[in-house]
Amino acid sequence: MTFASDSRLPWWRNAVCYQIYVRSFADGDGDGIGDIAGITSRLDYLEGLNVDALWLTPFYRSPQADHGYDVADYRDVDPLFGTLADFDEMLAGAHDRGLKVIVDLVPNHTSAEHAWFQEALAAGRGSRARDRYKFSDGRGPDGSEPPNNWQSIFGGSAWTRVDDGQWYLHLFDSSQPDLNWDDPEVGDEFESILRFWLDRGVDGFRVDVAHGLFKASGLPDVAGFGPGGETLDATMSQWDRPYWDQPGVHDVYRRWRKVLDSYPGDRMMIGEAWVGSPESMARYVRPDEMHQVFNFHWLSTPFSAPALRQVIDETYAAVGPVGASPTWVLSNHDVVRTVTHYGGGDLGLSRAKASMLTMLALPGSAYVYQGEELGLPQVDVAPEDRQDPTWLRGGGVGRDGCRVPLPWSGSEPPFGFSPGGPGEVRTWLPQPEWFREYTVEHQSRDPYSTLGFLRYAVARRRGLVGGLSGSIEMLERRDDVVAFRRAGVDGAPGLICVVNCGTTDHVVDDLGAPVVLSAALAEGTGQLLPNSAAWFLA
Ligand code: NOJ
Image (cartoon, rainbow, N blue to C red; front, side, top):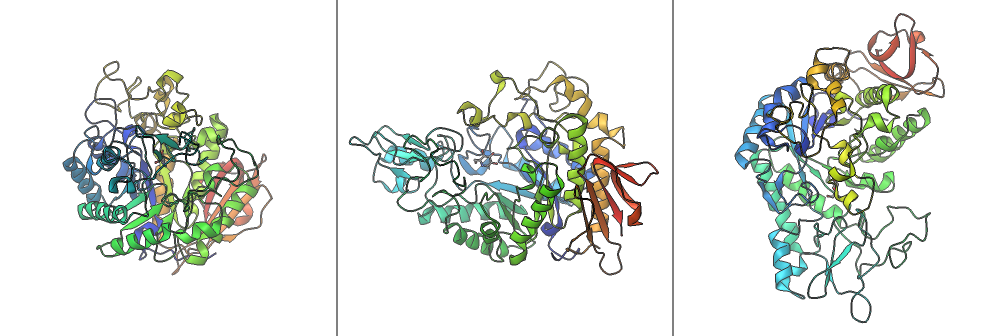
């Protein structure tokens, strides 16, 4: 398990990247929705977190049916979030502070309000404009049944019928028509979009639904679905679908890689590629394709030593053969917050901190979702306040609960998220009263708060990472304990990370190594408490 890990390598190989869900990070103009000016006003906070990079979720012109993942104009900022000038100011401020900025690219689908889709609707069947999307005639004598049995990820059929009787494909919401990547104009357009943002100075892209751009030719039925989309074969892998991971995607990323490489600086792209096997994942990060892919295995894993060991092994199995750097993702805007995922309350918080510490000790890059540094639990959003299309289409529990605007200060909503005082502003999702215990202001007073702990952990990591090898050696400990060591390079000390997933204390005295950081060692006893982790110099 060896990966290069020294400070001369490109920044993204060892970065801590903080994900900003723009709607919910900070509101500069007082409308209750986060925006670019809000980010600019909080750059000092971000610098103080000691992270290396920011990833901004989509802020482009959009009707916001999927909160920005439905883009109507890829080259402009939605007025809800500000202007291109606001973006440039934010980017310059981030760069002044040494922070890299990654923006989100949404190539699988546009918004139904995109000029191309409007043109396709108006131009009618058989037109050039319809070639840019996946339009098709329906089945049945009068074409009144969808072209195949594909289901939207957000629930219901993946096909919607238009006035002239044709159907269009949308793997997500009906307001997010899928593009046709077999049409060369689509590829040319996205190259031009990449260049637009690279010219503005962005450091990279997070590529949405990177595994979905191409669909199997002939648009065959999913074998395990019935005609109405009902699952007939429960044993079938959810990744074995004619719309995921088709070979054509790789040429797209090879093309983009050439574009990125032609710009100065280490511009990068990281793919959201949900695929079924380590081998498939590795294909996205071959040396001439993407720089990284999100490794989502960690976020769905229970807090158990065998499970964590398995994730670590599988991650290395995936990226090792192609020499890519691993990534670790504990949460994002699509999943239940970590504290809640791990059982909630003090137990969930202890495990979340331990898991974060483990992720930060591993070689590669860690992606941290906003609010995780505060230990925010999932919010139980009332049905009448829900806004997520997955909830509205009946396709899931909804993702609103991890997207509630951050609590910055004060003791009442909007908790400093918006400039207005209590009662003056309604945030786009209501904040619960109990957020008062979690504000940045509240936690900043206490170095032992979750925020204090993570700031310190990320700072220590930054100090150590340049001197650590990219290899890990798993250490033999109890079955319910995960432990690994990274050797030091060029005379620097190495690092041992021990995670106690068991129910009893674990003796760590025998390591004979000084503690760097712990969450938590029982004072003076050399015992690592259950549901906690610690770092040692070694
Ligand atoms: C993945 C994004 O993370 C999610 O929020 C979005 O709904 C889908 N892609 C569709 O773009």
